[in-house]
Amino acid sequence: DGGITQSPKYLFRKEGQNVTLSCEQNLNHDAMYWYRQDPGQGLRLIYYSQIVNDFQKGDIAEGYSVSREKKESFPLTVTSAQKNPTAFYLCASSPRGVAGGRNEQFFGPGTRLTVL
Amino acid sequence: QKEVEQNSGPLSVPEGAIASLNCTYSDRGSQSFFWYRQYSGKSPELIMFIYSNGDKEDGRFTAQLNKASQYVSLLIRDSQPSDSATYLCASQTGGFKTIFGAGTRLFVKA
Image 1 (cartoon, chains in turn brown, purple):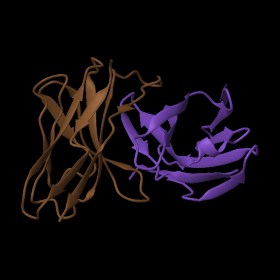
Image 2 (tube, chains in turn orange, yellow):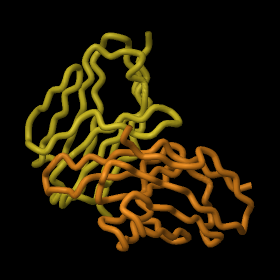
Image 3 (cartoon, chains in turn red, purple):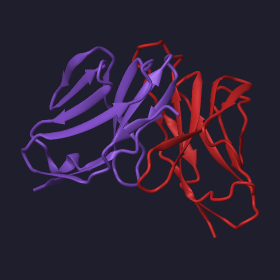
């Protein structure tokens, strides 16, 4: 059963703590992404990776870090430097893209992070 | 800053009516366009993809693209209460980086 899994579904963090959100895919996709979604807003790109051992910052990378040691896995760490981390975090993956093609992103179920 | 703009709504239509959702984008280099549906508390799922000017139909859904006007729309015919969700418009350049709009909330009244 192919897909993307994220864990945990809900996460509570105290201020000053780092937390790591898990994202795993078994779709054999090359590219993986992390987005943040705040209420009433669209998806904002945090980090993305097109191949193993390589990743780039998105539009709101400050206070976050990632790694891509395996094709299947793209964990996101929310550090204490992230000033307002409470949000819904979505991981996605896609095959190697072709310009003008149907380069659909497949999303995981999301992790809702709350800072107490 | 490249952007995708949508009316946040809510857009309310009666059951059986046509719902019309609109989107504009700023990057003339955008090549592919997507409509995702997102139910409350869930992740987005793709419902339509379009890359050529004109209309593309899939069941009750029709996507329309006008690159000269940098305008994308989604029509939902015979709207059902189960269509009530937030619809995200997205543009893509170079087969990879995707920019999402903030979404339009649709309510279909039974």
